[in-house]
Image (cartoon, rainbow, N blue to C red; front, side, top):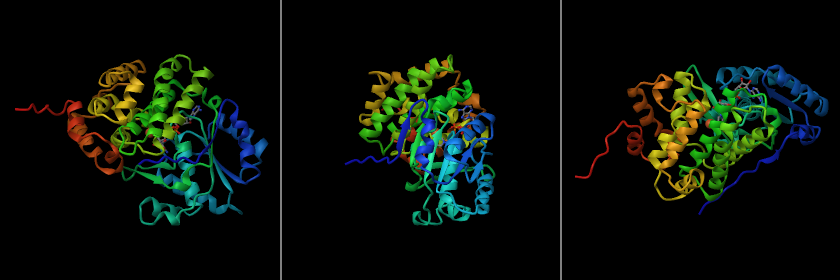
Length: 373
Ligand SMILES: NC(=O)c1ccc[n+]([C@@H]2O[C@H](COP(=O)([O-])OP(=O)(O)OC[C@H]3O[C@@H](n4cnc5c(N)ncnc54)[C@H](O)[C@@H]3O)[C@@H](O)[C@H]2O)c1
Ligand SMILES: [Fe+2]
């Protein structure tokens, strides 16, 4: 038996940003975005049609940190009335920060107790959220979780609650044409990782697989062309579609071993999330290819009949995008790499992975194959 559920109402297409006021339908709102000029001008455009926000939080930095989120949440207490909705206009860092604000409803301690698993889901009842992603991307516009980083403690948390599925996802590829080549590659590979992670996943089902295949094929056929033609709206649209479809895939499975491996690499070595969670993908494919079931079916549909050859195809694509697949490139030494792989199996995301520690160490070249005597 399997089930699939995703309640997010999606509006997709060039110019869809303009429907935001209609979706807000006169409700008061808090806007969460970045402080850069481009986002200021979008905020002004929104204000013309939807009215002034009660509050704008525009000091969102990449990889939202818990200490800053606490300070930002405190700003809600100064409001004369609470908002009826939160609008997140930005990439994963903005959408995930907005999820924290929506869950906290001005009370950071209550949200934190839930985040640290010291309180149950009934204590959290998030405000409605409208997510407008400007990267393609994290897929956070169609998932019910957000990543919260704690740089001081060197750990990351996942805030997950069914009430955090955005009410609407407004995906407008026109908002993404100004992304740099670097950001385009990083965020595009994050989407690829989400698609593949939902395949080698204990929670995979036929619907998540269909989304994953369409998403991964979309990224692989679009990203190499897009890096040479960054302002091409058609290619931006294809990437936006792939990233949201990847979101639909992993919204029901969560991520797996590549993401589990990635968090300490981002925390300790400062590697951007999209690179940290994707440079290991060929190695992971080598370790799981050939197992019958949804994973192999999906890998064959993405890469062609030969699942083992999939790793080589992906390596070639990553090389073309300028992404190194050797861990040493990221300042990781062999002993740390072994340790990272071993410990990636602990925790929820590692346990979602259908592969084994032994096979992954083998694929990493850190273990000799034991030949049958
Ligand atoms: N909730 C989830 O399901 C999920 C999934 C994957 C990643 N994440 C998290 O999301 C975060 C990463 O998000 P991200 O990769 O979208 O990047 P981001 O939100 O961290 O933004 C990175 C930079 O991109 C710039 N930027 C964003 N959109 C732009 C645009 N349209 N034009 C020009 N510049 C733009 C921003 O100014 C910012 O400096 C990480 O914290 C990661 O852990 C969450
Ligand atoms: Fe990710």
